[in-house]
Image (cartoon, rainbow, N blue to C red; front, side):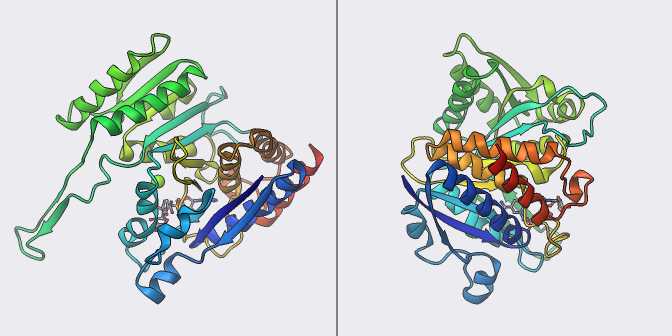
Length: 350
Ligand code: NAI
Ligand code: MG
C-alpha cells in the first residue's frame, strides 16, 4: 500500500536526524513491500525568516492530504520559541485533533544506566495533547511598568480529559493494568481536582485496572528513583511534557525518546516526532542521536498498519545499540551517520 508522508525536518538537529530515519525507513519499506512516498516541506525557521510564517497560509490544508506527518524539531535561538511552537507544532496538533501524545520509555540494550539499580524500565506516557496548560487564554498588561502582570489560563474539558483517560485505560488493558495519573490537586485547586474526578470516573469503567493518583512533584522524584514501578502514566499537557523528558533521560538519553501525536480515530493524519528539540548546542556537528527519530518512524509504521515492519525496525536499532555503537549522549563516539549505518546493517541482518 502506498503512503504519502509529509516530512518537516525543521531546524537544528531535526535536519540531521530526519535523513537518518528516512534512510532506515526506506530500507524497511523495501523489505516489507511498503511504498513510502516522502513529501519534503521546507517549513521551519528559515521559512519564518523569509515569509514571517512557520507554516504557509494553506499549510494545514496541504498536510491534511497525507497519510502521516513526520517531524524533526523546530526552534532556533534567534526566534522566540513561542513563534516556532505556536506557529507550527501546536496548530498541527490541534487542527488534526492529535489529542494523545504517546511517549514510550524503555531500557534499551547497551545503553548505560544512570540508575543505581539495573531493573528494566518499560513505561508509556499518555500526554493529553490538545488542551490544559497550553492555552492561548490570558494576556499581559502594563508592560515595563512596576505593576506589569501576566495571566495564563489553563482549560480542561470533560471531553478532553475523559478521552485521554480512556486512551490510557485501553492501553493499560493490553499491558499490566496499572495506571498512574499525574496530578497536583493540593495546589491547583480547580482544574486538578476536576482532572482527578474525570480520570477516576473513566477508570471505574474498567474493573480490571488499578488507578493511582500521584502528585506531580512526588511522581517526578519516584520516576527518578524507581521508574520500573510505572507502566501507563496519564498526564496533562504540561505535566506529560515534563515527565517525558525526565523519563527519557532516566532511561539513558532524551535523544532516544520517540513520540506519536495521535488522532486515534484516524480522521486526520497523526504526527510522529522525537521528544527532543532542535538542540542548538550540538546542531551542525553530526553527533545527534538519531534513535528518537528512528523509533518515532517505527511508531508511524504501526499507525500506518505495518506492525511487522515497525517491530523489525525496533529490533534493528536495539541490535545496533547492543552491538556497542553509541552516540556521544550515550557515552559513545559514533556520529549520527555511523549510528544510522549500523541500524541499516542490522535491518538487513535480521
Ligand atoms: P533539546 O531537546 O533541543 O535539547 C536538550 C538537551 O538534550 C541539549 O543538551 C541537547 O544537546 C540534548 N539532545 C537533544 N536531542 C538530542 C539528540 N538527539 N542527541 C543528542 N543529544 C540531544 O531542548 P532545548 O535545548 O530546551 O530546546 C532547543 C530548541 O528546541 C528550542 O527552540 C525549543 O523550543 C525547541 N523544541 C522543539 C520541540 C519540537 O519541535 N517538538 C520540542 C522541544 C524543544
Ligand atoms: Mg518537550
